[in-house]
Length: 222
Image 1 (cartoon, rainbow, N blue to C red):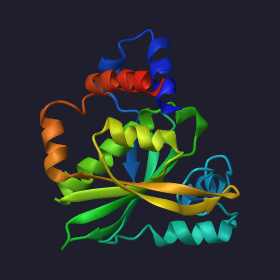
Image 2 (cartoon, rainbow, N blue to C red):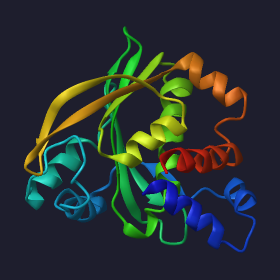
Image 3 (cartoon, rainbow, N blue to C red):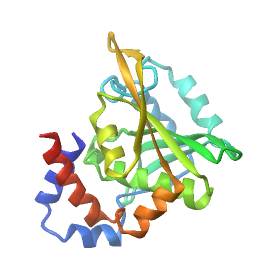
Image 4 (cartoon, one colour):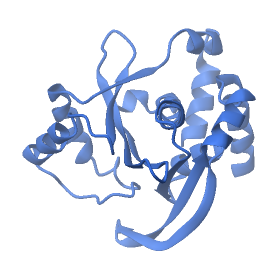
């Protein structure tokens, strides 16, 4: 689970992790490129990776993945897709994220997906950085008022990171998703612009503060 992996990773480091983090992020974000197709094709067909996602878990051919990626390369004012890339010498894609249903009248958007497909980057930091990036993009760049998302309640990583970053659980869609031979409840969560800026002003999105809450969250889950 994300909490245990992040804390274990921190405890194994022999450098000042917080200083290192402030100097250089783990990931960076860019638009999709043609070279991303093979990696995304692999991840979309990874049963374990898609086991607890809200979307359907079905096999998809490379041609369909290629069409999906290419259709999301051009600018679209109502949805944005990013390749999540390693901020190191490789610059390789390690996952992707998406902000959809951008509504400028209602001033809201759906943080509708994040996939960290490269197993070497599934220690939690890429997840955290992506969530923070999406929130900053939605509230600071687009000036939206509300960001929302959904997750299967059994997906502990998604549920924990929502708590960690002060999202509010708005409700539950009962038995809304069928996969793995059973129905799952889906949690609907959101965060408002005023809440985001209030927590940011208080330093709650700085790594030191996040790590402290991670340890507390682990205690609460035990």
